[in-house]
Length: 270
Length: 270
DNA sequence: GTAATAGTGTCTCTGAGACATTATATA
DNA sequence: TATATAATGTCTCAGAGACACTATTAC
Image 1 (cartoon, rainbow over the protein chains, first blue to last red):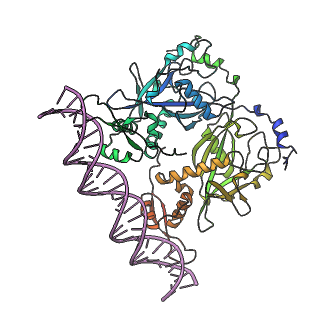
Image 2: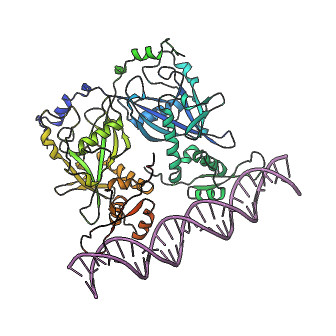
Image 3: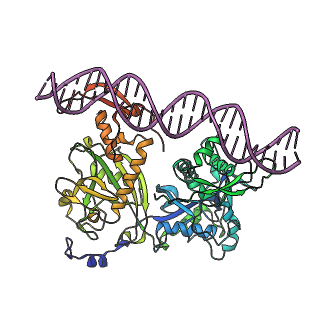
């Protein structure tokens, strides 16, 4: 069964003489968009983790955390690794979004980036942006690692028309303050989330195990960027949630909400 | 406004000293799944263009046409180029599907592949697999180009449970006859098509300008892999199609069908 | 005429949206 | 008791599915 090619080589022999370095090729990175929910205001907002660039190009602009794909790891694994480096967390929802391949998108050299979307419950993020952070190799000066951690921050997101607005306690950003094509990446992720929220259960990846209906509804409203009708929302969610025996202690006045949890169901494969 | 980094370099100076070759990185290819419709049988079938591998690895197996992404072209452009090399056609529907990044997926070297889906009306394919075909560089022996063209073929697709079946007049293939992870790529593309057909107008990219309702319905049935209810289908499609003044000449007996065309509408941006 | 395929009209039932009402906490 | 918030019940209307019926060709 040993098949031979036009030069009479077996697969073994062919692979031994194969030289992948003959052609110059692009670099590949993963960019991981890490989302959580900001519950500090009446209306919830999605939040994204951004890092401030310490190096050219886009020096001092804000960027989606990313890094090169190593030779010994799959692209998925690189995204998992990147997520763990940023948040210290494993077993987080992670989904490939899109691959960005325009020639001029990085002025240094030709870089193709695979973007991923991660959804993290706020409750899991104890020391915000805790854990070590490694930047893309080759651009971080040795010994400059410690200061860098202060330069990651969560930004709440909203949209004015087509344009993104990002803010937190200390800063406000426009799209111009984002590095590379990262504004487009974020917009695509928000669109994807808007669509998926209808026919999948990804919202629950942003919530703790126990949550109330008002919490769930406000999260939906934040993602969809529109108000929902309470009773109908409750009815439609019944397929995914079940009531627990515990009540929530109300913040101000009013009837306390029941805690719910996601129905135990087969995880859908996609 | 000239900002300087930790070493005191401006962006200009930084880019001049930046050396992308310091780190080894994976190769990147595009794989373009080119679909059309097989109308030769009572029930239509989707068809895909496959090429027979002339070289290790997977010598003599069938593969999705692909090629390396050049340093001077975007990933999208590489897919367009690849499609034109295979079919001789431009201005064809092309959509990025997924990026495949497992470490061992190509035994030669580390290769990351971005898969695209192209939808071509059968009517545009005059000389089947016409046009020159360039294979991935570095694996084609010089002067072996002419024989290669006979080794591209259209295969009709069906599914038995989770497994693909492919066939044409001269051959039948199982998943084992496909190279690399290309069976998974095809399955993912079929799933994507099934979903998109509900809320987009991509089906029309598989049809000529004029088509009849029976044609349209059978195409939907081929993609969805289920029979549809004629009158309801007709009603639901009214939003997308309009009647012309021409009738189709019936093949055997029966009432002749009207030709329809897609409604002129703003192309939706995604 | 008959067989075969294309196309229309209409009934029913489900499900989404809107609104009115009840329940349970705090002050 | 007043007020604020949570949760339930029900009415209506549009859209999906099913079916019966009409129309136009070939033979």
